Length: 358
Image (cartoon, rainbow, N blue to C red; front, side, top):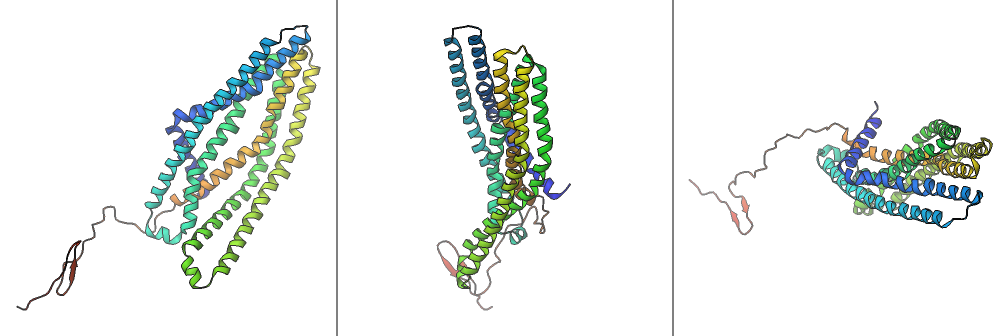
């Protein structure tokens, strides 16, 4: 296993320990947004579909459906507010604890470590390690759990209308995942270079400002500015390259598959027969909402890989063996005994020790 992969797994273990430690907040933070999405994107359209079928059959009672529809929307917003409240606690408490752990890990390093690493780069790394946890938590809650849990509910409902609808929907999403994943992995190398470039930019800024007296003493302001411009230009080049790869490679593959899935869903809902107006509305709404996941593959992987890549830039420092081994129980520093002619100091007095002959 490479050092970078070990660093990524170490970052994941740190983050997982925070989710476990804060489980009284992390569990509702993960599940409640999923419940809200289920009510908003799948249960509410089901009520609308039943209303359409009721009206198509000659029914006139509309108020009861409207009341249920409104209640679902209010309930969805209510659980979303609670979920976001819990997620805010996970983000804040987790980031705080990781920041303390990161600082303690740096303080435990030997002096040679700080001689070999720039202070600005270390500052950026420990800060990213702590607060990238919030990006991981938000992505897991809003993009992963909140999308795939409602998909299970949609599959159960569609199965009751016709199993073919479920097979087509899940099958196309799975195919999209297999097709897009290799492209996303190729993009990871670009993201690694991009994150390393911004780390160099941050480190250079911090070191230049920290040593500004030396910079001005040698009249090196222009050279520092030129160096900064070159580093920023390199980061910009890699950032645009990674964004273009996502837009012009990954999304260009996902978009046609999403369109094909929606067309197949609508066609099958009409052609399978015996589904009625209600079944057609349900199939159209569920396929339209579920296929949004196809575009989430890139976003999910992009956010997770970016966050873990930055976090790994810090955890890889923890894997470096020390070059200078300090004693486990160092002796306290004691001043030497006073000698003839020496001056001893205390908080209040000063005394000079003299030697008398004989």
